[in-house]
Length: 272
Image 1 (tube, rainbow, N blue to C red):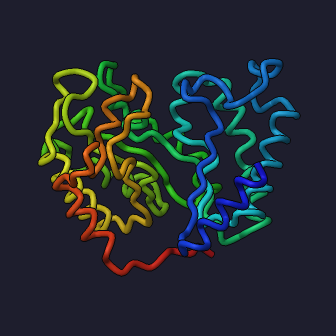
Image 2 (image 1 turned 90 degrees about the horizontal axis):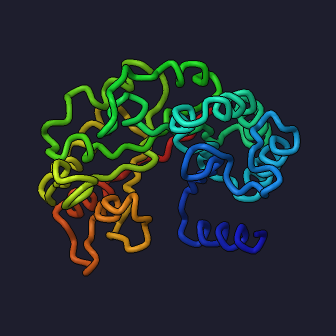
C-alpha cells in the first residue's frame, strides 16, 4: 500500500496535476462499510475501532498525498436510502474527519459527495419523491464544496428535455462552490428501451454542461469515461458506453466539445 501511495504521488508530480482523492467509505450496495473484515462486517461508525481506522487513514492520505480535494464518502445519500443507521453513524463521525484533514492542511478542499438524481428524487423505475436537501443542510459548515455525480440520460435521454433549473437549483439551495465529481451521458440503450440515446444527444448535453458550469462558477467538471469500457459491472453496463471515444478509439462528437473546453485557461481554485 505504501508503494502505491509513493507511485501515485510521483505520477501526479511528474504530470503537474492536482489530485482529487475519493474515499469510497461504503461498498457498492450502499448498505455496508467498504472492505471490513468478516468479524466487523455488521459494524457501523459508532464502533471505536472502525472510526479510529478511518480517522487514521484520512490523516495518512492527507499528509502523504496532499490532494487538492478529498472526498470522504462517495454518494452518501445512497447510503441513507439503503441503511439509515449506517448513514447517521457516518454523519456523527464526519465532522471529526473534516476537522482532522483541516488541521493537517487548511487549504485542502474537503467534502462528501452526493448522487444527484437520487438526491432530487429522480430515479427511473421508482416513485418520485421531493428533493432531500435536508441531507445536505446539516453538513454545509463542514464541507467546502457541493460535490456530486450526475447521469441524467437515464431520466432524460433527450438532452433538451432536461429541465432548465436541473442544476441551477443547486445554487438556489446550497451556498457552496459546485463540483461535478463524475458525470456522463450514455450512448445507445440504457437500462431499458425508453432510455436509448445518441451521440448527438451526448454532445448536446456536454454543450449545456459547460454553459451551465460557466454560469454557476463550477470549480471542477469530471467526465466518467474518456473511452467506453469493458470492465464496468453488468448492472451498470450502459454507463460503460458513456465514453467520449468508443471501443474502437473513434472520437464521438462530444469529444470536440470537451476538447475545446479543456483547452481554455482556467485558474485552480484555492480556498482559505
